[in-house]
Amino acid sequence: MGKGDFRSRENAWGWALKSGLALTVLFLLSGWRPGLAQAFDHQYSRLGTVLGKYTVEGLVNYKRLKKSPGDLDGFLESANALSKEEYDSWRDREKTAFWINVYNATVLRVVSDYYPFVKRLDWRRFKYPKNSIQQIPNVWKQKLAKVFGRQYSLDEIRQDILAREFKDPRIYFALTDASMSSPRLRNLPYLPDVLSTTLDEQCRRFLKEPQNFERAPSGDKIFLSRIFEWHREEFGGENGILAFVRKYAPEGVRDEIPERAKIKWLEYEWALNEK
Image (cartoon, rainbow, N blue to C red):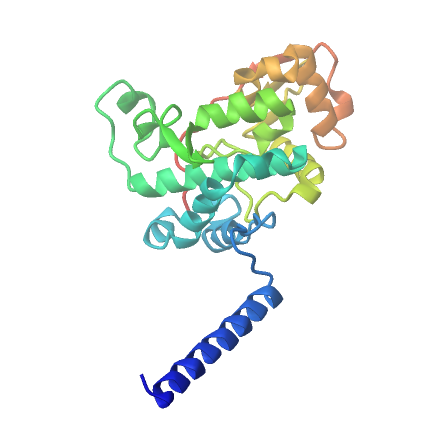
């Protein structure tokens, strides 16, 4: 090998070394570290894009969402990529907001997947409307959500995680079941730093709507959403339900509800919350 060849190779190695150092400096300045996963987005930007684009006053444009699921899938993929170790380091309000958002995003995804619905060939065909989430086979028990690389059903997220671990019945008014009688789906995600305030707002909003709460003219009876009936234990039984309603019912009504008021359950409208 001649001197010219050696010098050419020497120059090439020098260029590569300098380039490598330059790239390393660039990565360091940009915050990149080898082997360091990107921090989870607690502002839920991609889910916020979905909610802002496809929901209006609690109603969802599933037809449009079905055609453009990219941001929704991106959020759900980020939930799956999250490590259990990172999750375990979070505060309770961060964990609660996370699971509420995962639950609602999963409902949006499965409904848009099956949209438009076809009536099932079993008893649900006659009990529920054609455009109902209940027409989706085994929708509450299917392993639809993937988090930490593990599959979860909607029932598991709602009852085994949110209800059992965090013991806050306000969460039931943050979760959508894609029906007209379910709590209205916000056009914003749930954020940990304002979670408690937002849950209070959801409870008040829910009890303002006649389809969820009415007081009989006689005053000794109230009519309530079946959400309270289905989760009566988490609310502390009938007395706990009444205390909850007196706390979040509209002003001017809450003080007129007797402590021993009789509770009657309103019909639940399972038609799709479709825009």
